[in-house]
Image 1: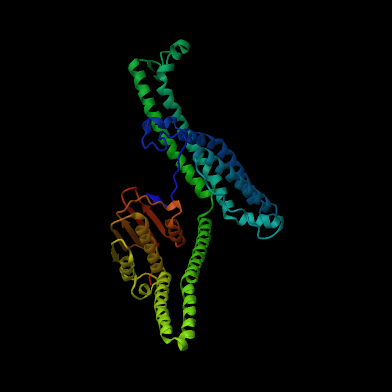
Image 2 (image 1 turned 90 degrees about the horizontal axis):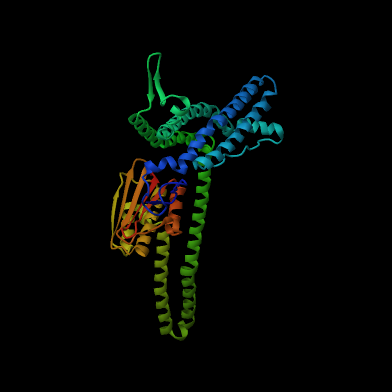
Length: 448
């Protein structure tokens, strides 16, 4: 399945060879040696010293700053403490990128509302990102202690027990005991020294060693969540960036549509009308000298007028079809399907008409998808389904053609995906080679 905004993440050292489609070594056996496991393990081990230092710094700055707020000194102390926490965020994002393969965007820089040092301090104190990164330093410390104290002993015991048959000889030679002491009191001692016990210890060690990577990944996922939620841009910032991007996409799309309309008018109807003007001028000149020739010119001009009107109707239908405004999606899509050279079956199941803007987006999405079907798919039949699901208008166009459509290849699907994204919609294209194409779009529902 392919989407316009899909991303795949690969970790170096994965047992899956890119492009091979199969694993040489079962994942459960390869996980203890995978680069991902060791990167996450190193991140969990480094958590303790780094979190301890940053926690001490944050608590000291916070306590000192708030304690001195009764004087003016507390404000710069607290501002400097928050600025230092932003520096901690830079370090932690870089560490997560290097060891966890997690890329988190930089939060918005501090925007000075007023010039000077006082303006900078005010901006730092009013920045939500600064306080979220302070919260990270406070919450990360207890988590780092817990994760370190859990993962390191389990990892060490696993490898120690797995390799116990290799170093068990150390005890009788240098410690004068038969093996690891499991129990002992004044009357009895129990040692791990017999071959069955040594073999059992090795099996337990193997089980721990194979389970540790999944424990590491589970603990590292919490670190990923904390870094992404507390050290990256806030959801509000992300939404603002998305809206700015969507606004740019809408402006670009509108400009492209205007250029297309201007080009079609210039190269089509306008050129025909200029020719028609010349023909009528000739007919006027011939009217007195040769009425029959003038009549032929007028008849030709009449046919040209019909062609121009037909072309203008097609252009107007491409801008916004009257049938869509008057009768809604079902008749409009049926008329659209009737003009497609590929037989198309249309099923529209809507409890009510959505807002005109939603209808327009759905209509032009189906129009673009049917154009792709007729031009590229070599399909024998196609189907259009439209229905409502919760607060989303769903539309699906499927065909039995060649498949292999790729939205990221710079085709019309790319522009359509951008249009969907600009209105908080989604376009998903499933197009395996030789098995046809199914394009599904979701558009936010708004009632008319």
